Amino acid sequence: MAQAAADSEPHPGRIRTRARAWLARLSFLLAAGAVTILATFGGLASLAMLAVGLASAVISVAAAFWFLADRGVRRWMAFGLLVASPLAVIVAFAFARLLWVAVASGAAWLLAGVSARAALAPDPAEWRMPEYPAAPPPARPFFIMNPRSGGGKVAKFSLKRAAEELGATVFLMDGPGTVDVAEVARQAVADGADLLGVAGGDGTQALVADVAAEHGIPFVVVTAGTRNHFALDLGLDRDNPAACLSALDDGVEVRVDLGSVDGRTFVNNASFGAYAEVVQTPAYRNDKVGSTLDLLPDLIRGQRGATLTARAGGVVIRAPQAVLVANNPYGTNDVAGLNRRARLDRGELGVIAIKVGSARQAIALLRRSRPTGLMSLTAPAVTIDADSPVIPAGIDGEAVIMPTPVHCSIRPGALRVRVPRNRPGVRPPAAPMDWARLRRLALPSRSRDQLPPATHVPTPSDTAPNLK
Image (tube, rainbow, N blue to C red; front, side, top):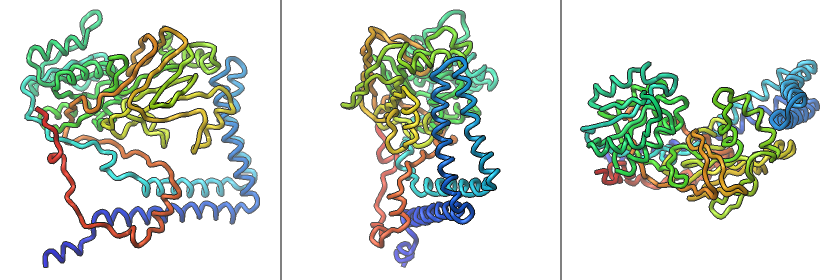
């Protein structure tokens, strides 16, 4: 009888399938509503509205390219066109008394997109990294803290005192001269440290993470940097760095990959080409925007910097203006995804290459299905060569000069990261818009709606590796 009652309960997978189906139907309904609003209240003028909107998008993209690729009067004329183009569309719609139609139709399209993304969203098991039970609290944790990082977050959040109250030894990078962070970490391990932690920027984290991985001991990230990209992808609290210290007494472990550039470890990415050239200039630190705008025209036109060739997984990319090699791929389905990685344990490098030398190629980026100036792929290894014996590189934001060819690789599961059990977590990645799949979800067949009997799903404790 109890078994019969259990069988009558809705299966969680079936509930998710039905929810996705209704979200897919809602997205089609909203899309139809957007078209209906245009056709009913715009009439023949709706076609003109679409044409004007498309023309404005094309003009805006071309103007943005000219602004970045030119100097002087032509640059500021392009900026004026960039601002004026959407304003002209708004004014034209207002004079034609169609502004509210455009706003209402656009809102319906926006809601249709939100509903479609929700229907197509991947299951949590696809984007959440598995967690493993952490070993007992470390006996001799050691933290390296940069008091200047993040505008002084170490002092602002009393991180040194908080770590010491949890039994940690803290090394402050406040002495005169440069500190060999890796050597400090190695000496700490030699003295018996059984956990290494960092309160600082991503570059410092990479140096210490390499030592932790080398010795197989846990690593803790404290969000005391400026941007905290690595911490963001670990789901840590970036607003309260002190909360990261709870990983010491109430934490779980995740196994993450580490990237490598000719033996130098990175936790986020290594960049080559335009960005690397810009950050090498002495004026960049004092005037980032001005330096970038001054150098970009020559970099875009190929009049400055080495000519690169990237080889990734059998694909050859010739003369890209910029190449980004990431420790696991970044999301590319929305703008926000460009600085987020859903997982850090896929065992593959993400590669993004840009080659846009004209306004025509910039406009081609509007074709989301096959943009010609942007390439995104994954590979286990990447080689960057050039027509120069050395090239600049940005490794986790640090400017370096490297001999060519440069070899990038990945070390799967190399780092044991200890994170707080209770933390904000990682935001679900945006799913690519797939109208064919959305249609199948909206109109599921009877056979597709039937789910097999529930089976045992391994838990983290079932699959946890030996962490000792």
